[in-house]
Length: 292
Image (cartoon, rainbow, N blue to C red; front, side, top):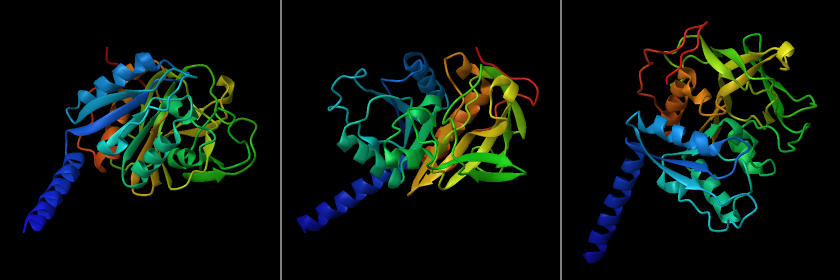
């Protein structure tokens, strides 16, 4: 009798734990500690943006500084509905790598913020999870560039001369390519973003990848002359992955284009739907919108 009661109690606990991850407020984890960009400036902004939706409670896991012993860095990824990476640095311990892959594969949400696409060039599973990456000595021959041409995705496997790059900061217009996805549903087809790094030449496995929005990188501003994917999702196992390439410093994070896309991406990664309305101050096709 006691055994049956214990098993029933355990089953109820498991259901409650699953419900806690599946219903707001969702638990979110931001990972930082090393980055070629200003993670100390951007992490507090990312945390604030998540919290102001009233959909998330947010923790931050910070690694030791670059080159120091990080063997104790072991976040409990499984305790969170979504993980946001603001990290680009030393490899995590092997056990942490395994736990992260299992987390995403088993249905965890993951948001790749800006330069986190440059992390872990040699980690095969991470590159499959993020879909496309850049910098760090990534292979110029393996994987594909993803282009948007003639109204469709083109997977370009031609060996390249660069993997990850951008011209000078510039204002640019984003164009929605998949208007029926929960992240982009209801957004205008075209809208402006503030002056920012326009990432290009991202390359990787590109499997199970859906391009949600692109921006054109003109050659006169040292771009590839291509419509570059700046917002896209990746399916990895049961996990929901979103890469948001906008950002750079806290200044660029004031852009309503970034704010809305980041908040909506995080909600979708956490639960597979978006309940947030389009903000009243969302940018127009020819003018960016900024929140102080």
